[in-house]
Length: 233
Ligand SMILES: Nc1ncnc2c1ncn2[C@@H]1O[C@H](COP(=O)(O)OP(=O)(O)OP(=O)(O)O)[C@@H](O)[C@H]1O
Ligand SMILES: [Mg+2]
Image (cartoon, rainbow, N blue to C red; front, side, top):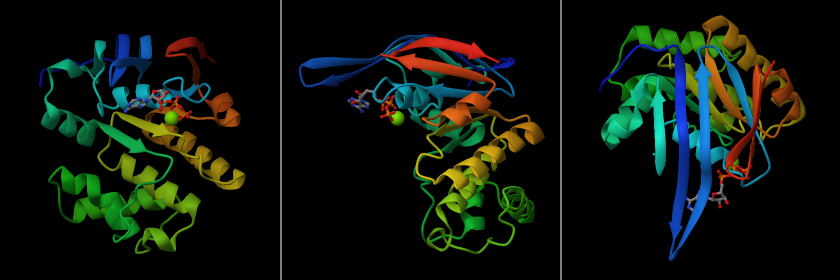
């Protein structure tokens, strides 16, 4: 993996993504240009089907663009094989999805520990960090609860703690509060802003939640596979 130190966490130049469906090609991203700096909280908004999740997957090295150049934390994705992509995701990116994807048979603490285990890190220090993270998301009293023993909002907070476990350069979230009631959504959003301040953590969040978009540093509007507006506050 080649690497150069850059301030931009993401550099995406002229990104296209298409899916081949039988004889047809479905063009989903049609030339996206984007640079995301350290510590920014960016929200991505737009109607259903415009390509928000597709873009997020590419920004998170879950998928490669059909065309265009992307660097994540200075690493050009085109040069990586699948294993290197997985390693980059594990070490530098945290994910939070609409449905938390916690492992049901493991406790909150074990779920948060999972990314460090995958990275081959073990021991008391890691357990301590996972515990600290759960405390910082307000779940210090829920360490040994399994996901089914937590509320929806609590499960999402565990997912946020898990996303931060390996001290990622970037946290990507796809409608993290899409499945929560208003109060739980607000407290999840408060948490994201707090964490961003404390850890200078960069967040890119796809959301249909207008209040969250209004509170973010920068709103990227998508329409028909393109960025139609990019507004910093
Ligand atoms: N793996 C795939 N194969 C084929 N088509 C796909 C695939 N993934 C997404 N699409 C299509 O690409 C388009 C964009 O999908 P995407 O999931 O990025 O939308 P979105 O903006 O996240 O929408 P929503 O707000 O509903 O989540 C959709 O029309 C979808 O049907
Ligand atoms: Mg989506």
